[in-house]
Length: 173
Image (cartoon, rainbow, N blue to C red):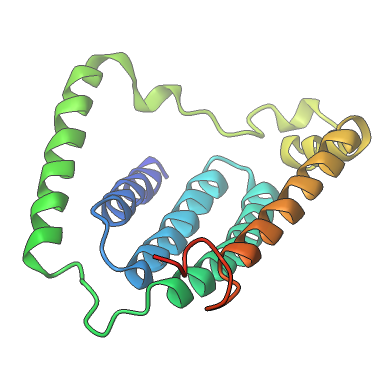
């Protein structure tokens, strides 16, 4: 199981590098969806299956909105791909940076410290991830209302910025 989780973590790092080398927004949004999927696979590998499913659905909805707005704002006739020369150079630079930073922390983390969420499942009544969701809705209801308002405000800001040719900050450039 640790080999599968290690494979997912390696794919997650490669997906983050694919997003960070800043290709066209089309490929950046695809990299974000792949990174979200692999991150949820890592969560499911550690025992948080319900949490990973919910996060994946939220990420897919958010990435759909991000992809639609980024595709509308940056409609390029010849987009940069991951195979183009400048993007590959930045990808190699980022991978070297990841390898150097992992060499700094190599002796400080171990595979044996990876613990599954339900390791002591026979002593608990609820699973840890579903119990956390219940606590979020009971004790964190006010924060959920604030987060929903902030998301609605962000939607109106994006709609105002991309309104059209007559008004809007980004269309004047």
